[in-house]
Length: 292
Figure 1 (cartoon, rainbow, N blue to C red):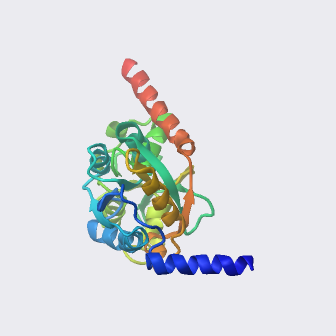
Figure 2 (figure 1 turned 30 degrees about the vertical axis):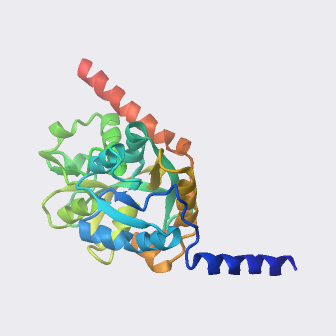
Figure 3 (figure 1 turned 90 degrees about the vertical axis):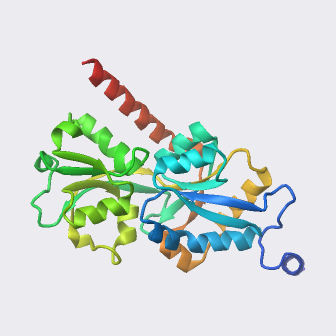
């Protein structure tokens, strides 16, 4: 009898709300914007997030605009100036967005080759280059991704500081590519000698833009907390809850496959304290180096 009542209730909900999982409330805006940090080129990003955006529109009965910026800072600034309501961010860009824009994490991604929300930073060189160690990279061309990238800048900088490497002195050229896909493609094309990236963004392009065998893995970092989706703190609480529940319920295989993830999981802000500690560590090391 209990199961029958539940079934009747669900049926009534479907009749009342159509295909929507959540009834739109009067306090919600008619349209919200979804910002995404540029881990890949614009066309790749659209393919990656189009399925999720469509799903959220249907679930929440609200128009969602997918908004891409040229760099990580652009997404943080857009949230700070209330041009976007929620965003896909890396760990470091989230910490910055929480501080500057009042961002609140609601879910994190679990990548296709992981069981928990996390991933690893990588330092790569091109196969056949003869570059297999950090020592062999001296005098070579190096690429970070963005100043607000965790695996593309923060992790390698912490490592370099620990082993006494000043990038601008150690490498013949240091540049910022703007995104992980751009870094990996530049390395593959031979325009750069070594890069910093991560397991998630690397695996996203395998079989489409590059092969695993195109590269040497010089270094793998400790596991770091996963990329995530965060909301602006001042949007309606009911919208935050509905958005979170919709993301946790996202099961569309094709859409998840395009993002190279298994699912989203609920996480807390405190799970990113390790990133805050790394930021402080980097700042302290730089200050001490400047004094010496």
